[in-house]
Length: 263
Image (cartoon, rainbow, N blue to C red; front, side, top):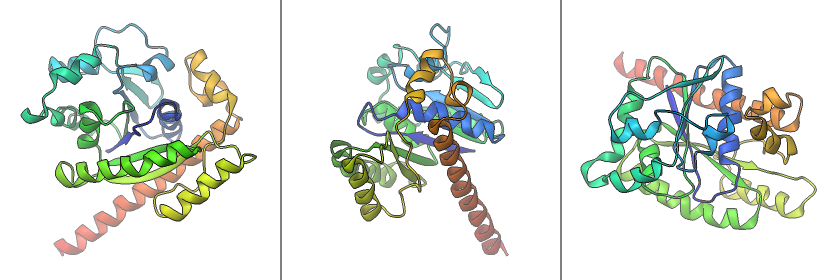
């Protein structure tokens, strides 16, 4: 099971949009996928039509109840959130090891799902730290603008500290650009800068600006249901395929290396 935290300390960059549509794309490739709404704003849950629910990820974290899993479509489920998750920020205590709670919860799903995508809040708080503690991999969406690029280096430094101190197995699966417009010089400059600074991390194709991506949540669905022939559907399908190839190829290499050691 690959647990992918999708995170950045800046809001408004298409993070939740990416979780919804990347999850739907993985499900479309017959990968059993679980989405976790880990943002108190609960935009992921709302985007998929879940507004009122008896149990959320908060109950699993704080009350130690079994997590409530809601089916979305074939191969795609979600554990939702609501504003109660705000209280978790005050109730969870890193000194008591509470940032490991999400990891313990997800361990029970190891034989159920192939991919888990965590929609993190736009800040490096106890919730994001918990997600990065549980994650095997991390994806960083970056909007194609100068200020988003500025904050990326600082965010990566913070992630490195978490990797060093808490989760040595955490890997950055990639950085991908959102809301890209080929016509804008600044957008092209951002891509060029990322290619020069993070050549091994940058995913090979950006997600283009597409009005259908903004319209799909209004209909409480993903881009593949709403506009399957749109740029948004094409780009997230391509991103999902690249992630599958990258992570599963790495997994096979690790297994081969382990076999050689055991021999």
